[in-house]
Image (cartoon, rainbow, N blue to C red; front, side, top):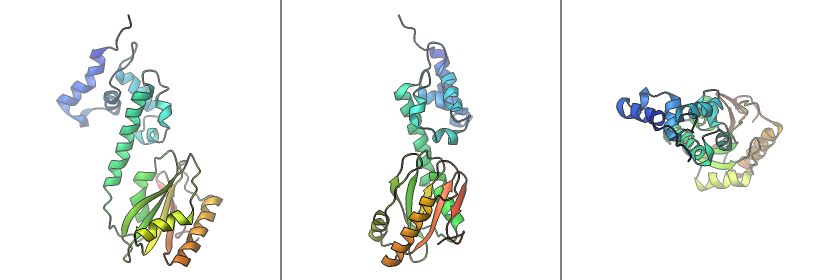
Length: 226
């Protein structure tokens, strides 16, 4: 007969949640509630600490790890790994909801404040287009491509099809470097040149290309490269 995980140890974080509220719980206790159960040898909180160790205790670092890594931890498996991945994605989307459309963009730092919370912790590259109205206010934030690891292919056709559909007066393009280093690559420079030229032809100017790397950013406009 196979023994079940210890219910007393598994239920402790749930009891604290009910009696004290989520703000009183540690990160490990919150993750333990997501996991639900531990193993025959360790409780859910101990398994949660092992999950957090993948990010050295940092949720932001954990969010950058592939979800497949979670399932390799004893006591996790694919179902529980899916719960953790989903919870981290909910946190990212919560950060994105705090960005009301219509925000005025006056400098690259404004773009970073808009995109940084969404892009900085991703494990893959995403390429976004911010469409602007005639007053330089953001009207839409459009995901154009999602890459694998460090590669993300972008064609001007996809970028400007979206911009024209939104009746954009101008655009700012943004993507992230999962490495955390925002310095532009040769490919980044080539794509930027292509987009700027296409924007001139279509009369939808590209005002900037901002690269998010962790808490830092690189602006082509700020660097005088547009």
